Length: 605
Ligand code: FRU
Ligand code: MG
Ligand code: CA
Image (cartoon, rainbow, N blue to C red; front, side, top):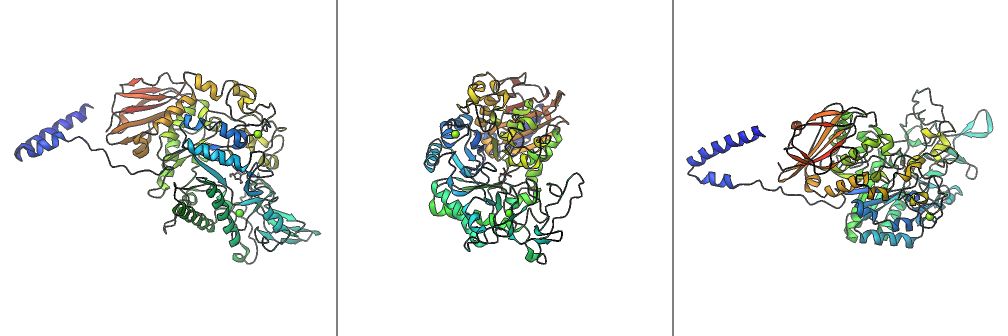
């Protein structure tokens, strides 16, 4: 501070002299000049939104059958504006035999009966829109349920649908005349061969996921047309866009390019895996095929065109897929000028960071996305979803507020998975109660927990009443997690300090121009702590400091944070912090307890 004043003093002195020389005019102009606020680019609704994933089966049950439903969601829609959330996306709500809890769709145009009707959906949309919320649907293009009409007709050989799926003859089994061998060694995501024999059609069909999820044949134009029809149908109903499922698996290698054979995936060489287990092969011919991106770019052209034709706000596409950074970035578009998804979900905090990570790992993983992202694109941050252990379980309960703060203070879109706003942890689900197809197929009584996605899908904790207020029934489709009496939304609204209150403070801070438009800088202080500073000329500077260590306190020097001028105020602190909102930080040297996070607000630069 002293130094800065001194420099200003010298500058003013020099300018004064110059000004005098120039006849006093320059001096007068410079002395009165206060910094101009920057010109701000207007943002589209989605570019800085808080996006919330609802897992409909577990959000709120309205009819007491122990299964969440659309009327349940409708009854709790006020939760979103209360939490400062701008948009919701719902895991699939379409007709499904529920082998993969909605990701196996039997009718893409129909609402699943346990969830409600098209009228319920319309009511949901209308109420959400009246609250200013955008509503995104889950679009699942890679596969359809084997109970869908598409598949049934295809299996029956109806010429209209015959090529809708990936059918292949396979090979005679030299050891058994009545048996046929699958066309390749491809392994399904849920274990076992990715090829299943159809007695009816006397051919194999491909399924990259469950046996009951048959992969569409994207080389067949009518399939691609049908995907557009599905999207158009729901956009006509008023959906604001789609989260698009499992894109890396859309295409597989074709025999025409491989001497008439489906090529085997190379073996990983990892001896712990047997040939039916995921991990036995490297998915060279079954994942991230370059053809898939053109389809995504076509979809973007379609949604852009749709908006041009029908008006209204931008209809968005947020793409889902776990892939390496270059294949992930291609979803945004390519250097030839094609535009794809508005963004691909950023899963780096799920795949590359954990409770063991140190501050440098956090910084590195954030900079990784920002480094590889195409110029002008919008980043996004995801800490959990229905496929992975919940954020407070993968990290630590003490880190919940720091992580939510990081999510909210980083540039771009903050994504929250149902329950993260109250710090919900994984629920315990016994082997007997386990229903996830991945766990049931890949695991047994001793190993299912390694694969099961059920713990991240247990019902939402609304309050401390029956089934945590999720359902009036005690018999819910997955058990309610045991900690709901202490950990629930109603309690957190009452407690003086709670994860929810921190979340609300953060989401309201997001309206601040520094966060929507400001620059960022992020760096580790030490192995334990890092800072994220957001700054914008004439607007307050906002800084997150976060000690991610499990046990160690850490002393940091705030003079290392660019653009932060003391005294600063604690805008919000993690709930275990000894500091409260409003605390003045006047000293550069600050000691952070393990897991402690502070959001500081300082004067403009
Ligand atoms: C995400 C996911 C899973 C589902 C799979 C197939 O990877 O949504 O939840 O099982 O795709 O649709
Ligand atoms: Mg219900
Ligand atoms: Ca596929």
